[in-house]
Every structure is written in structure tokens, then in C-alpha cells.
Length: 252
Length: 311
Image (tube, rainbow over all chains, first blue to last red; front, top):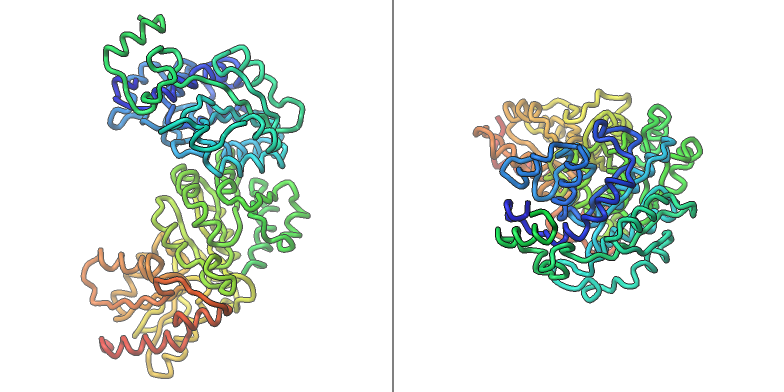
């Protein structure tokens, strides 16, 4: 998709593919035939720049035809480079500006609790996104509201747009920060599906606190020449690079 | 105005179980009755306006009708991007209520003056902006706002504003209320300066000038029908607002006039100047500083009429 559409952020998308697989194929109680079900679990991709990965997950999970992925970023396509409101079934929030998703998720969780529903809200954000002050506003209020049905996953690939996320802003120790903000905070390997599913299946975790999952990931995961190379925040692959990547991923 | 808001929102929450009131850590005693009646639908979001607005979006996406309330500059300018992306881009039915419009909190200094909020929110697609002229208009505006399926900003004064309407007028968002007919000048007032506009009209009458007065409570969408009627018969339109002369009601009417056919009507924009105000003093002092008094409005109107002549 990135090659055909010549779009950036491929490294950011690959970084969270395993998380999306865990969430969409194991955690979320959702029905692609009834995407507006009031009681569905909500998922917000707060790091909207990685939406190519979410589009793929939604398509393969049955929310819209897989063939539609080929229209990614074409003029007039529903699948824009960053998602617009309700552009496809299953897309809960238009994102792209960082630091919105968790707050919106809290609002959804509050509404669910008020209505006596048991649905959960999962928000995926990037580590760079934790630069935004609004994330910590949400962290403070989410804890005081004891919204235990909320889980936020931080895709902690240690890179943001122009450098190491721990050098640009003092992010570490990240799990401890969430804990200090009153969240039930976990640390997992963000490419270990079993570990991800285990921690997410346990939401709400009985502590009465919202859950934060710091998922250690590798930017550009799965393609040797992209892994942990921040050039892939902006680059899109050539045809030859796509061919090589396919071989590495057993898709050739 | 804020007491009228608190009373009306309490009633509305009784009528509509979807209504949730979010506060940015203000209005503690003000919402006592609301909180007694609807404790689970009151949420103090703390001094964190960005999160408050985005949360309201999440609630609206889940079928609730959130009303987000705090001091005008903080519920508009502070969280402008959350309003733009989460409310306007998604076109969600969230009511933003700002208290302390214009110079209401003059003595608290420039941080608390709200003289750019209309301009900033007006350019956002899907947004409506309503500035009620008295407590009765506040009640009608909040009720009408909750009947909308899109974002809206309601701009309140503080407390103790004089009542203008004796009985509830017909109130429709986007439709000005004519309070007084006239033929020489039309005073379009938005928000808390409405009594000032009426007083100016009385003064003008003494000088033999017939002034129409309109509570032009909705700045967006603009009441083009009313404007077309006025511009067709009255040679001078004066906009009065406790807001910058840039981008508010005056700016809106100027844009409308510039786009339309040549109407031979003159526009005089009265509001706060394009500057920050410094130093102490209450609202009355601040209004005087910016020429927002009935005397000054009448004086400038007469001067302009003197230049253009009467029809």
C-alpha cells in the first residue's frame, strides 16, 4: 500500500501490526456485520499515521472488501492517508493529530458505564504521541474516574519522527509513569501475540484502575532493512524493496 | 446569565437522559441543584480543557448530549484544535458554553478577556455560534442548541445582566430578533451588549434618528434574510459586540456585504479594538475604554449618518 500510494509512515505501521492482530483477532468483542452495535468494544488508533495497518486489519477482519485496500490514498478514495470520520465501517475515530484518542476513548467509556454497558475501549497510541500534554490530562482524569474498562497501549518503538523518543523528551520510565498516574500498568513484548492477548483479555483487571500496556516494539518490524531504521518514518519502498520484503515475510 | 444557564440545564437534563454536563472545575455552587438531581451526569473534568472537549466527543459518538462549560477563553482558544478535529470534523452534537464573554471578567486581566473567541470558532466548518442578549435568551438558546445535531458554541456573560425580554420571544438559531423598528439606522447587537444597543437607540431618537434594534444572537449561521431586508431599506448598519471588530459579528456582516451586490449601505463596526487591554478595572471601565457605551455608539452613529446623509 505504501509503495503504490507513495505514502510515508510504513515503519510506524509495521511497528503495530502485531498489536492490531492481537486486538482484532482475539481481544475485541466486535461483529463486522454489525459494526454500529451499541455494546461493541471500541478500538481507537490514536496514532492515525499508521492507519494503513488498521485499514488492512479491518478489511481482513471483514469490515470491508480486501480489494478496497488497493484504493489506498487514491483521489476520492474512502481510504485516505489518514482516516476521515466514519470513512469505512469499523473505523471509530478520525485521527492524525496526536493526543486525541485517549480522551475520546474516556468519553466512550464514560458513556458506556452510564448506560450500564460492559463494553471496553482500547486505545493505541505511539510513544512520540506521549509528548502531547493532552495525553496526561486524560491519564489523570481516567484514573480519577476509575474507568477500568479502558486500556491504552503505547506502541513503544523508541523512535519518533526525527529522533529517539527518549532523547527528545524524557519518556522513560514509561510504565512507571503510567503507574504513578494511577493506571494499572503492564510491560509486554509488543510482538508477542500471546503476551498481548493475555494482558488485554484481562481488561478490566479487577484493580478498578484503567489499564496501560507499554508494548515494546521495533519500528519497521518484520522487514530486516526497515527494522529500527527511522528513515522509514518518511520513506516509501521501491518495487525492488517490496519484492525483498515479500520474500522475508514469506509472501512471495 | 449563568444562573439562567444553570436553571435551564438542570431542567433539560431532567427532560433528556442523554444530557451530560462537563465542567472545567468551575461553577461549584452554581450546579448544586443539577448535581443533586443528576449526580451521575455531572463531570468535573478538572482544569484540563483539551481532554474535556475530546471526552465530550467520545460521549457524543456514543449517543450522549454533552455540554462542556467553563470560562470563555479556556473552553474555546485553549482547546481550539480539539474543537476543530473532534467536534467539527466529526460534526458531533456537543454544546460548548463559555461564561465570561468579552470583557465580563475585565478585572482578571487579559488572560480572562474573550474578545477573539467568536472569530476563532466562526471559521470552523459545521460550527454554530450563539451569543444570547439576556437571561431569557440564554434559556432559549441552550434549549435550541440541544435540538441541533451539530456542534455549537454559546457565549454567556456572567451574572446580573439586565433583562431585555419581558416574555419569551420566538427564538430560532440563525434568526435575529427585531426588538424595535426603525428606518435611519439598524443596530445589530450580539450578546451582552443588547441593553446598550437599546439605550443607544433611545438616545438617537432624541436626535430625530429612527433606529431599528436587532438581537442578532446568532453570528453563525448568519441571518442573511434579515440582513437582506435591512440592507434594502436602511442606509446604515451598525454592528455592536463585546468582541474584536475583527472576525466577529462586524467581520461577518462585512464579508456578507462584500460578497453581495452593491447595496449602497454603509457598515459601522463597533467592538473592542485590535489590542490587548492592560491595567485594573471592572467591565464598565473596560467597555468605556473601548467605546462600548450607549453614548459612544450614538455619537459614532450620528457622525457616520452626518457623513452619508439620511435617505
